[in-house]
Length: 458
Ligand code: ADP
Image (cartoon, rainbow, N blue to C red; front, top):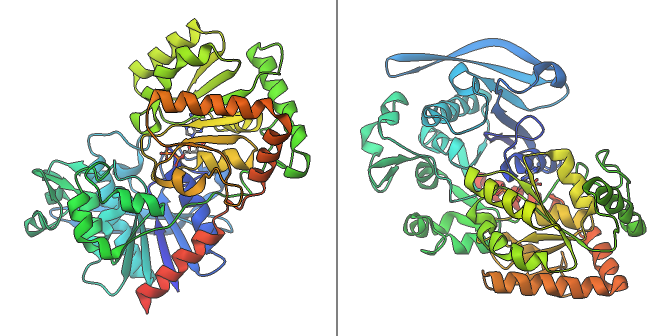
C-alpha cells in the first residue's frame, strides 16, 4: 500500500507546534508497516545545504484559471520525504500569517493532488486545513483520502474570491460543501470529501461534535460522524530521549531517575536560584487561551506564595507576553521566558518536577508525553487528549495529577496536591520513574492508522 502523507509543517525542517512533530513521527512509525511518502513545502527558511536537499530535476506546471504555476520537487538523501517548491507557497519568512495563505495552501493542496496522481498512490493522508482541499481536488479519482484534524480551532477560512484563483467551481460554495458564513472554509471541504476523518484523541473526537468545542462545525461534523474516529498521538521516543538528548546538562534514564536532579541544579544555577530544594514547575506552549493561559495568569499571585519555582516558556499575543513579563518581574519565583526555543524546552522538561498543562481544550497535546518521557509529572485539566493520556490510577499510562473543572481554584488545588506529592520524595520519584517507562511512542497509533488505511482500500 502506497500512502502520500501531506503536511504544511514537518520537524526538523519546519515546525510551529504539535502538527510538525506528528508529521515527522507518525510517518516514521508507519514506515514499518506500509510504503509512506511524506510531502511538505520547501520554505525558503529551510536550510537546503544543511539538510542536503537536491532537486529531482523536473519543473512541473499547473494551470489554474488563466494562470500557470510552476513547482519543483526536492528530496533529502536517503529519505523518502518529498519537498514541494513554488515561490508563492515558499517565499515567506514564517509558516503562516500572510494575506495570501488561502492561495498558498490552496496551491499546495492542488500540487499534492497532482503528485498523488502521478505517483499512483492508494491513499493521501491529509493534515489540517492546509491540505484539506486535496480531498476535493481528488474527489473524482480512485485515490482515497483521509483527513486528520489536529485542531478544529484552525479551519482556513478565507474570502470566497480565493476559490476563483484556485479554479474551484462556484457549485461547491454551498452549505454542504465549503461555504461558511459567506466565506470559504477549506477544512469543511476536507470533511465533506475525505473518505475518513480522524482526530488526535478519542475524547476530542466526541468533544468536537458539541457546540462547546465544535468551533461552528459541530453540526457539519455530526452529519459526517460515521467517517470520524479518534486516534491518540504519540511522540518520537528516539528524538525525545533523555538518555541521549544532547541538549541536556546531564543525561539520565528511568533506571537512574535520580540523575535527573543534576539538570535542575544546573538550570537553577542559570536562573540564579540558590537552593535546588524547591520543586520546579514548568509550562511550555503557545500563549493562547486554548493552553489555559488566563487560568495561569490569574494563578500567578497565589503561586508566588508557594514554595516552588515556576518557569513559563512560550510566545503569543504581545499583550499576554507583556503581562507575563510584568508578573515575572514582580514575583521572584515566577519566570517568564519569551520565545520559541527547542533546546531550552528539552532542558526544561529534563529539569522539571512537574509540567502544568491547564488547557481549556486540547485535541491531543504532546507536552504531557514529552514531560513523562523526561520524568516531569504532568498536571493536566481533564480535556481531550489530556484526559485520554494522563491518569491518577496506577495502571494506566501516564500517571499524573488531573483536575476536572477549568478554573483557577481547581488548578491551584492541583498544584498544591503536587506540592504534597513532592513532600514525599520516594513517591514522587517513583511516579516520575513510572512515567518515564510508559509507552508514549507512535507504535499503537500507527497500528490504528494502518487498520484504517486497510478499511479504506478494502
Ligand atoms: P500545539 O497545540 O501547539 O500544537 P502540542 O502539545 O500538540 O501543542 O505540541 C507542542 C509542541 O511544540 C511540543 O513539542 C512543545 O514542546 C513545542 N513547543 C511549544 N511551544 C514551545 C516553545 N516556546 N519553545 C519550544 N518548544 C515549544
